[in-house]
Amino acid sequence: MTKFQRIKSFFAALIIFLLGIDLIGFPNGSSSRVLSLLALALTFSGLNTLAYFFNMARFMVNGRLILFKGLVLLDLGLFSVSILSVPNIYILLYLATIHAFAGLVEILRAMESRRVGAGSWKLKFFHGLVDMIIALSCIVFFKKENTIGIVYGFGLIYSAICRMISCFRKTTLTYIQ
Amino acid sequence: MQEDFHYYATYCAAFLAGYSHEESLDIAYSAQFVDLCSRSFLSKIHGPSDAATTQLSLELMDARTDILGLQDITRIWASFHFLPKDLYAEKKGRTRRYMYKYRLICGPNGSLVKDTVTLAKDKPVQSVGIAMHVLADTWAHSNFAGTPSLVINNTDYDFTEILGTGENKSERAIKFRHSTSVPDDLENGIFTNSITQTNENSIMNLGHGRAGHLPDYCFMRYKYVPAWGDYTVITKDNPSDYRKAFCQMIYAMKFIRGESEKFELETYDYDAIENCSSRIQEILEKRQLIASDDWKIFGEELSGESIADFELEKYTKEYIDASKDSKKDTFLGKFIDGAIAQKSMVTNRIYKSKNVLAGFSKEIFRIGDAEIG
Image 1: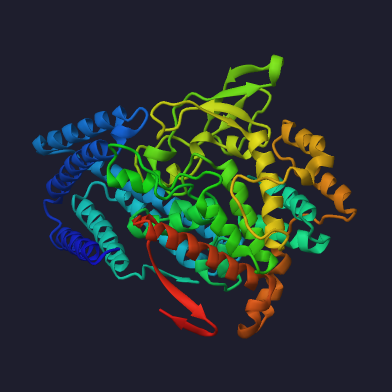
Image 2 (image 1 turned 90 degrees about the vertical axis):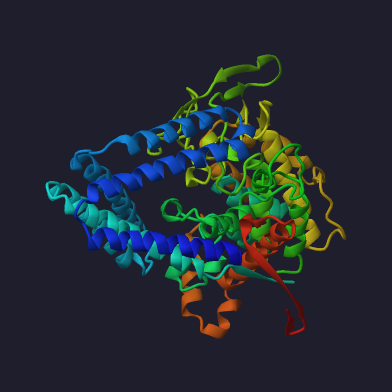
């Protein structure tokens, strides 16, 4: 990673981290804030997909599908901005699915590590378990509006920390002749 | 390629190149071990994680696909399983980002094959095994890249199998399914492949997943359209490619043993298999999921010795029990040194071609015991 990429990635992580803190600290009215974030993410993703099409996918066999995907995502993002209220249950189900899948992968990885005798399986198993608990919390506390803010906030903080760590990781491989 | 070629066929090639039975076994073991030396395994034996030569399927699912994650994946898969054919390839009108990926497409007889074989010269047999794995995979894995990429590794959905040869030649459409728990149905032409993922860097877009195990079957002849080829149909003739791989391995190992002074690309030692050519062709043409038994019988006939089945744990105790200073002298210690050397060399070549996908690399020249940065 170049110095510029490190700096860019670090500041992006810092913004995500602060958003996470904001959602946990002030969970009232989090539905609309989470929705705004989703709308922003969809719009950004749509634009990103269109940029990917013009940079790379247009050289690919059947690459036009990427163009259609980008247009649909952008459309959905812009549409989400116009929606004022969405029932909490949909947002929570989305979060529950994401965490349940991540948890399942972590637990399967832990089992595989355990089978081959690697020592890191307990930590992986713990991560998977926490993800599963978060997924379950989304469903159990679906009536409380604050749940969305807290769960989404923790997700953002976790993602930001991972990103910050990767900014300081060693990237050079030494070649000995 | 699978255990049949990387272990048993490599044993046969090493023996035909002039190695003893024991040396051939060690070379074959090292060649097959490249497919199993994962970070999980290295963590178990307390070995350096930089020496990983493969990633288990769940390790891959866990792998990150940010730039650092991609570089880690590329270092492993491009160095050991999808050696790039031409790091300086040109294609008109393409963006720089596209060309980073395009230049990592694997293929036989690239300059890196020469570098890989030369690197193994005057090294322990473990390095020879690693080089033979890499060389053989350039044939099986050609036209795919060892980095996650939709624009390179995706294919059109239509694949056609070519059955028979000459007047008996016929074609049939290949059907794909996504069930990894069910073995491929050779009789009815039903194979497992990966699901389309429209994310450029999705791990599902690494290597030949979209073509399933077709590149791994030595008997397979098929036609398909790769994502990068501007709608050009590619015909893949595995029996012919595997035969060339086998003869190139013999030629390369004879060079490593010092029988020839230079290693030239596009050169195959057909003379070495003159007496057993039809036998090898018979094995390569036989429709079966894995040809281990046939190669094993052939190898045992060649050397008159018994070939033990591959056993992953064969050398782990020796490595774990060795003191810190003597680990490098163990079988696995020598394999680890060879793996790191190969990975460093390929990473360095990719970096020098101004391609950022394998990460940054620094050269250190070793003169005697001193290192000059």
